[in-house]
Image 1 (cartoon, rainbow, N blue to C red):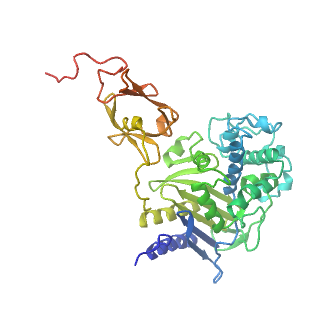
Image 2: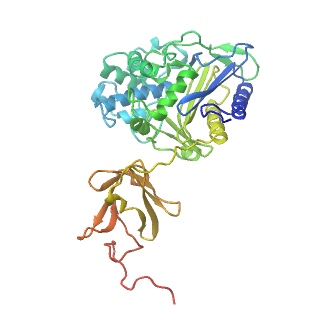
Image 3: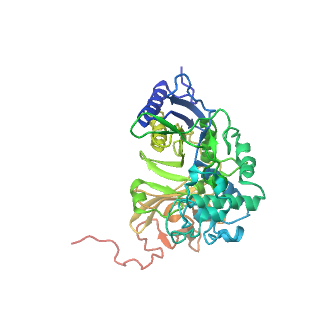
Length: 461
């Protein structure tokens, strides 16, 4: 008897339960809920709570804080894909008069716009949004703390501006645009701007005593696009699947790949920790695997979505406490547990349906100077160029239909690969961004820059 692929093994389920039980107990969280997604669907849900017999399920709402920013980023990327804006456009072009208009749309998405991290006092997360009715109230008198585009500096006001941009170009509220363009198409009917029953209450846990204090749940007003949403592990599981695979009704997989690509200059501490930021998505290197997603927190709540794209495993973790369990670490561990205990089974190998003889002719070993590479054609219609040593520059290339290929990643992203032919039609060499690749090291019959010594290869006598 075999175990259906959609089910996790009992030992895996117990390991997941153990991890969240430790997190809830050691983190002293009133409750903690989690869901694991594999192959695009939720395959496990777990909960731990301090209230006996009252464990929350995947329909109970928690506040998700800055995970809201990823929803806002999806709305902005939709505007880009529709041609209503360009990521390189300054904000001033579409939303004039803010005082922060020199920052581009991409810089605001990546938190490189130079803006302050927070709105002016009082603390916006614990006070009513009615205190900040205008964008000027959110930005303050001096919105910029850093030169635009020079460094990653997380900014809640920046996402407030992006929410206002959505409203300006859609002619409706951010909330209505979100519901119509993202929540409804993806079936996220338990995600909302204001809490809906059943929902968890937010608590502060005393750092030196096992006692609680209720946290206020303020409406953030203008700041809503930066952190207002309430959601559930069930809805966020579906959202994680969308972020992994795309949905043409909302956003293509290509645009989501763009969001998952690092877009902010990393500081030294980020390089050491393995952290980066894309367009509305955090990128982390944990346990030897790449995770994308976002964390969130507001007084009384902690939240995280982490997606191991290569493993096709995602985890959602929500807790109702101001501080305590490190939910990003818990989510990373849940992904790791499933990915290591039940590795992803690859799709069967299938051959190409057809191949161009001119493309097939390019396969095999090539040399850039003395560095050995191999060019392969794959069933998805792409070509890959990889160093035979396993170390060095590598990339996949897409065909352009005219015999040339464009690099898709790494050092050669956007660079043109061209097969240069002799008068008789045979291939002389490959030109890749001016680099000459030949069939043997420093082929004397190819136009190697600098020429090849006429005495050829020799020993030392």
